[in-house]
Amino acid sequence: MDLSELAAKVKHIRLVSEQLVESLLSGDYHSVFKGPGIDFDEVREYVEGDDARRIDWNVSSRMGSPFTKVFREERELVLMLVVDLSASLMTASADTTKRDVVAQIAAMLAFAATANNDRVGGLLFTDRIENWVPPNKGKTHSLRLVQDILSADPKGKGSDLGLAIRTTHEYMNRRGICIVISDFRSAGYWRDLSVLSKKHDVVAVRVYDPLDYQFPKGGLIRLEDPETGDQIYGAGFNPRFRQKYHEFWNVERMRWTAECNRRRIEYVEVGTEEDPAQKLIRFFRRRKKRAWA
Image (spheres, rainbow, N blue to C red):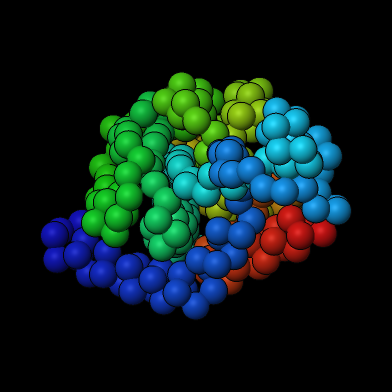
């Protein structure tokens, strides 16, 4: 990708993302994620309905009437985007690849965090850590992160999601939000993801393409694993083969969603033929309803 093409992509994603943030996403984003803790604010007279557990007995004894402690939530958040750049993301049944969608989602979330004056950082990975962008504030920083994702020329082809998650856990000292954006075509990461979710607010965003589930009709088609280079032949002319292909990957998807549910990890799935903005908006609104239920 040359500089002019990169600049055009960054400009387009910025305009789309900022319009989305200003209209819908920003407010929902901030209302569904809790801050890392609460800070003591003041002491005031106790009124009926206050939590008796927060009565300040020392002040109450001096003043001769009950006083209660008031706390305010610490609202500044740290959003860490764990972004997959592995070769399997180059899959595309049309013009938009899975990696294109990953970049769009990362940009939207980064600008949503920036609009709320939160810090945002990124960890870009394949079968190794490709780049680490420390959390910071501001539009310039978010633009730099988006540009790094779009212009990345990964050294690795495979996907070691477990390594990416462990590295994120090591770097994030305070509670924050970790959003993992990947096709999750990796192995051995569930335990690491569970450990991460014990400390941080974790959301898994799984990006897929129709080719992941529907084998194309045709003749004998040579398939190559983009991460390993292994090749096999698929009988696109055979309806039974296409059905078995669909059933296999559909079962894999159901296993993945079941694991997320079992481990209480929230997730959203976005297809390359879908509008990622609308999928994120619906996810945020559902989560907001649950938060206020």
